Length: 428
Ligand SMILES: Cc1cc2nc3c(=O)[nH]c(=O)nc-3n(C[C@H](O)[C@H](O)[C@H](O)COP(=O)(O)OP(=O)(O)OC[C@H]3O[C@@H](n4cnc5c(N)ncnc54)[C@H](O)[C@@H]3O)c2cc1C
Image 1: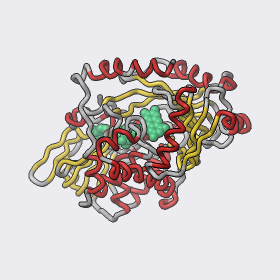
Image 2: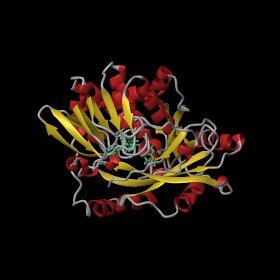
Image 3: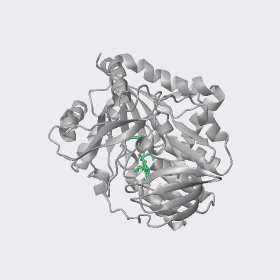
Image 4: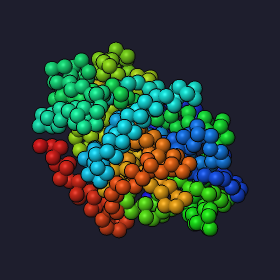
């Protein structure tokens, strides 16, 4: 599945600022490292390289900077991988799984440091609440607090029983929660553009409206074809997420584009929003098809939920999302929804990240709906490898990421069917 556009979608994020434009590539280009895709994965990789003093790097983007998942997401910077730690420990053993967890702790700090270091703002606020809808899943939350402490040496979590929940969230829907003060939330498109303008100032060449059509290895370099010019590079990074499509069929077979949706309300009275989320934490629940929400810096409620494994979007996202929002906050039934949008995320079979290298071609994707911090951790591994340090990327390469069953037509319906069992478990 490949989609592109000359402008940002009509999201709250896109409308909340003015975003500089970058030129389309019009001619042939030679560079040392070419990064395809200007979402978090590509931009973080370029930033790590620029910070290490690596020169002659270019980034190409088929649409606009942060046009896809990275500019549309919930903005929740949550510690952990979508798969949780079990599959990672199974594949890597305890020591390397612990190292991946520590990468996540690093990413949670680094995401706050990047804007300070480079002088831009991403509206960062700390605090993430992971809430249980069902009483039977409360034990799972308590178990995670203990596992995090005992196995992953992570002391950042605190269990919040139901009696204490009203201090954190004004919703009857939840039975208990885990608070992580090292998690938080941010404006994702501001992060994308903050990094892009930093890169530009440091001499990285960025091109929008420049789709890579195909690439081939020629001796010790790579030639990438775009509509208006051929790019020759020595090393290539594929950071294309759900849109990898036929640019690299081997990677395409490992990813399923999953559609998910979000709304933003009108600007609300500060006191009213404060009553709903007194500590301004972001919230996710532990349902299989989860709800996630938070306050924006300008006092809106940003609410996400629902998803479709068939990749499509509901005709009316607003109508689809409104009942989910009022299920959590009936007190907001009168509130107007001003923006409704959707996006695609890159799901892998086991929800594990797929990060690796083959000669001078590198890739990073498969965050499975949980990419704000994982993209940063993965980008560090790729940037290291581009500079000859492969310890981190080798860890990722030992993760088993099988292909989806069925061909391109059948993979989505097969996956959608297999997920019905988990959807039903959300209800009972
Ligand atoms: C609605 C939604 C809500 C989400 N909420 C959260 C959340 O709250 N917290 C969280 O942790 N994660 C969340 N995620 C997931 C997170 O946004 C992603 O994991 C992350 O943004 C992936 O970043 P990326 O750079 O790998 O991919 P993307 O942001 O998708 O970027 C890939 C880029 O590559 C470009 N591209 C692809 N092919 C080509 C080509 N051939 N030539 C040129 N360019 C190309 C695309 O145009 C695109 O801009 C959410 C995702 C969605 C869709």
